Amino acid sequence: MEISDTLMKIHASAKNHFMANGYERSSLRKIVSDAGFTLGAFYGYYSSKEELFHALVEETASGILTFLKETAATMNALPDDLKLQQMNDVFSARMPLLVDFLFQHRDETYLLLRCSDGTRYENFLAGMMEEDLRFMAQAAGMKELPLQPLAQKLLVENYFSLLGQAALEGTTREEIMKTMQDIQSVFTGGMVNLLQRNNRMEREKQE
Image (cartoon, rainbow, N blue to C red; front, side, top):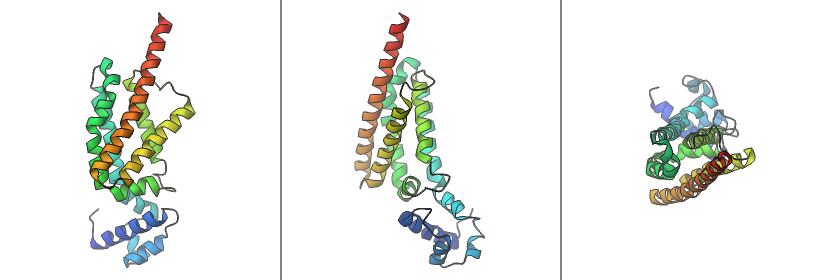
């Protein structure tokens, strides 16, 4: 869709309302009114408030998921016996790409992580969690990780929540980068140790 002056004003107003109040508590009528237009003008572009929210965050959501998929592809290209050993190195090497992307889309990242209740992006972190778990299990040559379901859910949800907080609360690119790398190293290092221990136990059972 071509971005007209009218659309830019509606987007700017919507971003302000969604960031201040969240999606569910934001009034479409107020968004459009504050942009200086009528609902009739709005419906010439979008059919609903959710479609408007989607337009604001779609590029950022797709970019984050693409980062995860490309990271998984990089890991999967390694020899099987090196995947676990080099998991943290692969994440660390690619982290600057994610940081730069999030730094360039900070408002949209905020909308995704803090303001999306009631939209199709409400479970965005859960979707990222599933992608990351599949990636780690594949790297370890497993169908699923050897974790209790609740432990797995809490660990990975909090991991992505911490990365999101780092991206939103850091004041400089360097601070965000270092914070996210520290979180990544602690999380991935712990996961690698767990997977290596599980592999040793499986080998011992077979001997």
